[in-house]
Length: 157
Image (cartoon, rainbow, N blue to C red; front, side, top):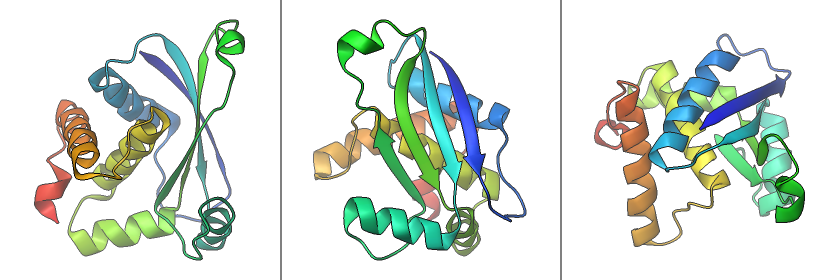
């Protein structure tokens, strides 16, 4: 799979992954999910107040979230006309990502990679609503992170 990532957002985070890193991480996840072809993923960085607003509007939760995913709802016949498959949007809150990495003793880049991969898998319809689904999704995350030389994040918590 060859992913193109479109980055946006206005945040004063001290470090954000660039387009190349995001594409590397997303392509690792796509390969592990056996997804082929060309795709586009939109990644937006938001501050905590915007994360709360988005989470409240779309999930009915009055709290910020580290990552939110919004799969594209493109009719299949339209998607077949496009050069790239539109997978959807991933929204990340750098403030929460940094706090979690610090509190969990993980490197910031490793935690970013994990959350971006997690968000991408949600775009591909993976979820963690049942124990079986959680096991499948976490196995894909671990496999993608391993391809990148990043340790299993679930062992570090």
